[in-house]
Image 1 (cartoon, rainbow, N blue to C red):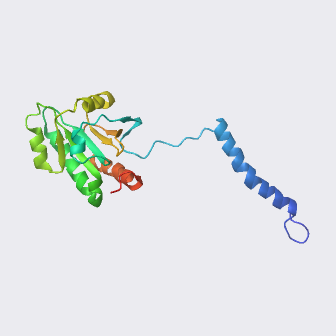
Image 2: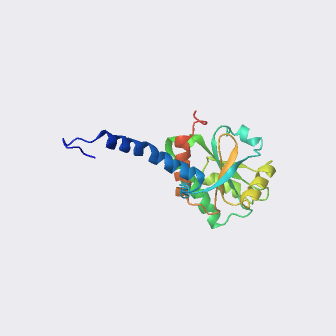
Image 3: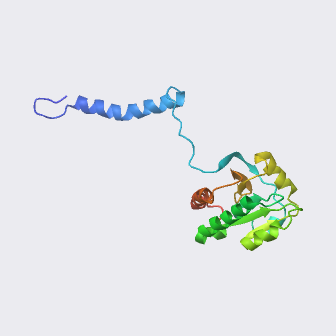
Length: 191
C-alpha cells in the first residue's frame, strides 16, 4: 500500500474510494432485500396513534365555536363525573395552560351526554376555556366508541382527522409532550 517513498499508492486510494461508495450501497440493498432486518423501535409519541387517521364526523357546533383549523382535544364525559373524572378535567386545564402562547392553537372540547347531571356546568367552573357540546354529538361519539370504547382523550388534527388517543386517566404531561411536538411541526393551523 505504501511505496518506497512513503506515499500511498494510487491502487490503495482507488480501493478506499471503492469501499466508501460500495459498502453503504451494499448495506442499503441488503436492507431493501430483507437480508438485514432493521426497523426503528417504537415511536416517541406517548399516546396511541390511530393509523390510518379517521375522518371525524364533526357536529355543526364545532364551526360555531371557531374550532375549525385548530387542534382539538376531545374528552367524552361520563354519565356521572367521579373524583377521577374531575382530576382529568383539572389535568386538561393544566395541560392547556402549560401550552402558553400556543394555547390558542388548541381547542378543548368536552362531549356531554344529555343526562350528565350537571357535569357540564362543573367543567365550565373548573376552566372557562372548555367548550362543552351536548347536542348532535351522536356520530362523533359513535366513532369514539368504535375506536376506544368512547373513553379517554382524543386528538383531532386541523384537517378534521381523529389521529391520537389517550387512556381514560391520561397523564397531562404526556399529552403536553405530544402536543408540543405536533404544534412544533404543524404548518396547517398557523394563524
